[in-house]
Amino acid sequence: MLSNVFANALATTTSRLPLPAIWTTGNTQQRTLMLGVSFAILSNILFGVLYAYSSFLTPLSGTQVFIWRMLSMWAVLVGYLLISGRLGMHIDKLRALHSIKQWVWLLLPTPIFLSQLWLFMWAPVNGQGVQTAMGYFLFPLMMVVFGCLLFGEKLSRLQWLAVAFAAVGVFSEIIRTQSVSWATLWVCGTYPIYYIVRRLQGIDAITGMLVDLTLFAPFALGYLYFFASSNLVMVAGSGFLIMMLVGLGVLSILAMKTNIDASQMLPVNVYGMMSYIEPALLFILAVTVLGNPFESAMIYSYGLIWLGISCLIAHGIKQLRARKSVPSSIKGQVA
Image (cartoon, rainbow, N blue to C red; front, side):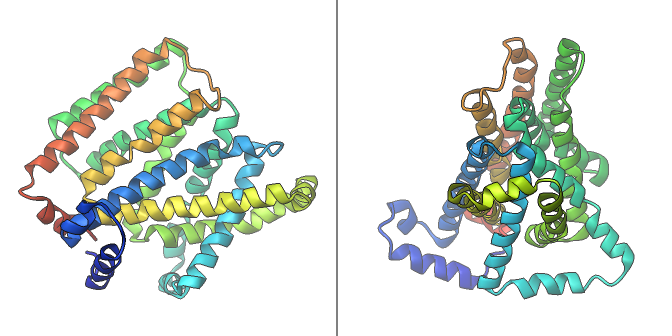
């Protein structure tokens, strides 16, 4: 639950600003909900911007943009934790791991995280933007399935219907193309594993991301020095590219930080429904700005998947309406 200190600080800050009436007439928990919604919208917009970002960094390839993004994210994250005085807290969490088994368990999902960030930068400029966006659409559905299989969670009728629609949609796409995009499968098939392993470990998102980026930083530097030295010289000699790469790191950390904050402020169902903003933006950007192909025949299979998503959203709305009041729901969900 959010601490009283944060709640009081939020109330004091909002009372001094020329904000709409809903910010000043509602109670602290309602304002927290509004702030969480704002963070969720902002993070999804930022992820959409990042999806198209690599197209503005020519002549860098998608893989090169990924390498630079990892380095800039690491620098920005470490800088933020140093300035905020929180770096020591995360280091202490890692020092608490004593056995080799604990460290192996910690490092197990790192390759998944890195591969997902690489695909996020590579796909938009290599004709896989639509397929990757569809993977993000399927991700919540796969989380439902994983939760059912691994944690024994019971599915409602709407959730079963959502899974059924998505399964038929994917199957029809396989029949149509005689294959299914590896990008779609990689996103929806491995990203749930990353989140589930981190959940079982009890490692928070920032600590996990600090570990992942720190481990990869030496490999990124080695790649630039030994395999892309000309790229290193080109970036070092271009003020525009340097500023764009710094912006890439700042936007990446800001997107992830606001997303994490939103997940802590919002009820789970609200946060889950708002997470669909990102894949919708990715899909639109892939087709319009990036010019990735979208065939009319894809409407049937993708339409079934979107119908499944609608069922999940309807399930979330139904659960929210079942709550007696907004304040009590926030109290039960805010961490």
